[in-house]
Amino acid sequence: MAALTKTKLEIQNLSKAFSSETPVLHHIDFTVRDGEFLSILGPSGCGKTTLLRIITGLVAPDTGSILKDGEDITNFPPAKRKMGIVFQNYALFPHMTIYKNVGYGLKARGEKDADIHDKIINALKLVGLSGDENRYPNQLSGGEQQRVALARVIVMEPSLLLMDEPLSNLDAKLRIHMRTEIRRIQKALGTTCLYVTHDQSEALTVSDRIVVMSRGKVEQIGTPLEIYGKPASTFVADFIGQANIVPAKVQKIDGDMITASISSVNAVTARRGFTATPAVNADVFFVVRPENISVQDKDSGAVKAAVRSSVFVGSHVEYDLLFNEKTVIKASVDFKPDMKLYKSGDIVSLDFDEKTTLFLDR
Image (cartoon, rainbow, N blue to C red; front, side, top):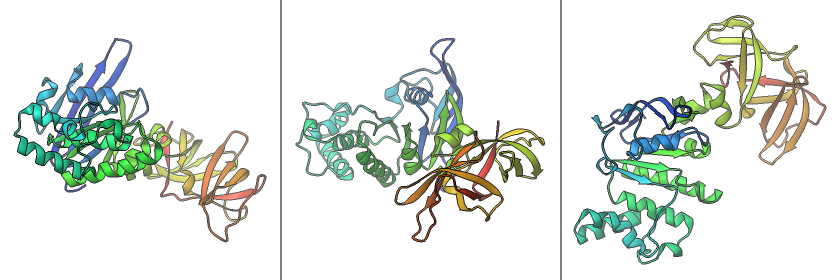
């Protein structure tokens, strides 16, 4: 990431509302670095597709600017933005061969047949479809159709590649394969990529950085490790992977470390994950991921809990643990041949690594 210093795309203060009562985007700001794979991640309705349509020029923003390579393109029509777009719907021409589908844009641009041929062959090779030039879309699997749609954009040599939920029509196994392929192709080309998805696994797997959105606002921008390990809000913690988000009350503050009670008999210490310094007795959230909880015999530690349920799933054991009648957290303990399996009703001790837990503002 250190080498990605030049800005390819800059989004400045973008806002959009389709009516006075339905604001869709609220003052969106972020940059995409040259050669970077940046994902816009969020649930349905958060505004990510509207944002992409504004970037492509299909929708005009109410406020804000879009800069590409330092040039303000906010008012440019789509054709002049020099962006390649891969949509959720592959939109292949059913009556054309793969060869003609991929070369359609080059033909329309008026390029020479010899140049078109070389570019098509190279693009199909890059996406793993060499030898399939004469097949038709209805003879291809969903994953192969996705590759054709990608090749059709690649041959146009865009300086910025935009993808809007490109894998949502594929089955789970094929999505995993194709996201790896898309990342491989992007690296091979060195193209800057802006990728829109609601799938957090996709975003974590393919991205250099992730923009997490909720209700038309940017919640956090960071690398996959930062987003997962240091969520900036309870929304990010809950949306990215699994997280236990437990109400707590501050007892002690020592720099960036906070000790807070999470039940009448249990207190934990963790990092402060928000900017403001809370007061003693302030309400906060204790955030810990299931895989960062160690479950031990009841005499091994200070934090006690009762096992409500335990499920062995092969690679790990999943526990539901009860602090009191209202506070339940989940723990995931990796399988070991000599591990002890606790059962419902057992009293256990829990250990939390201070480096992997944090408190967030309520």
